[in-house]
Image (cartoon, rainbow, N blue to C red; front, side, top):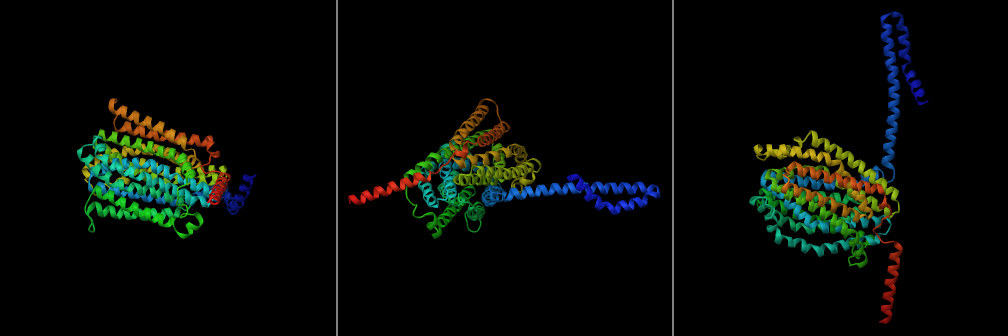
Length: 538
């Protein structure tokens, strides 16, 4: 029936041409030509009508996808500020490595292992404290704003407790890097960078705790503005402190570390100022919640500890692989650093998609709408997949072009070898990009529900196997750079598939991290009764 209507409309369109062609038929050779033209226009009318119908169907589907609850519009409103926020820090890392390459290729080779080790040491408390985002999201979805300020403060207390332990690792840094066998010059620079950058670790953890107050409620624009400002400050300080501009000392790799430390503490101070605004104090009890709550702290530790361990084993595994690659050669380590830097251009925005998925799952489960939580996850993944597909194509077909800036101010003769190795490494990155999106989004979704123990054990087993195979192969099997990157690729792909399958299983739909409201009311009544008895006894 639809085709008949299309034929009818196209025939009406072609009537004048049809009449002309009939008049032209008696003129011999021109008749055939006129008929062919009329027939082609007739067929064009049918094809145009069909294309119009399909175009309408596609546009209507996209409109529905965008406007529906947990659809593209809601996800993008939450995700885009996070993507811009994480991208700003990606650009910061990119610029930082670029400046260091202009300064010295040895400095570039030293910065990545030292920076990753510093992050690995801080990542257990960071993973634990960051999980407060899920609590905030579920409290927000359940309509219980009075609990939000209190749970954020539990994360702050944990940060203050663990920060001295993180800073104490500065004492053992020389021994750690001496054992890496990276060479005397690189090891010395690694110690310098590590001992400076570690002073920013408490700021990273604190800002993660307080920024969850905004991301968990969907106020990601605040996070975007604060992070962009801090990243811009870091880039300016990087340039000044590395090269000795505007009266700053030319400290090279140490200057890059201190620039990051200063910008991190500025960012943390801004988050605290916003967290303690009068409007936030009234609605979310952000000042009155400044107390230790034993029951809530217990819940945060129960769900956040596996999240922290998951981050530890994954980052520790990657750090171990970097140290092992340092034994292969200085050029191989520098190429890995450059490839990881370029990979950040793709990964960090997708990391924002993972945070968005985790937040929306938490909010929707707080509302007891697991169907919308599932839809939000698939929407997040579809956006992340399109983005990753684009970057996979760039890594495969334009690898030299995205390294153009790195080549400009360094030693071009030395850079040729570095570039050629990095081009091959980017092919590995292109292979695992889509699985990286699966790992980030589906892993974030099940963590947003509270399925942190599964995530922890999965990461522990797969990461341990990856590191053990790499170590064994490098020590006794003659493995080189390509073999290690093959292991990294299989590692990431496996994590992505396992988290995707866990998400499809659906166990996460019945999980919650916050206490039932009835339990809270009973606890409040019991506390009031205790206070009344205490008052009577007095």
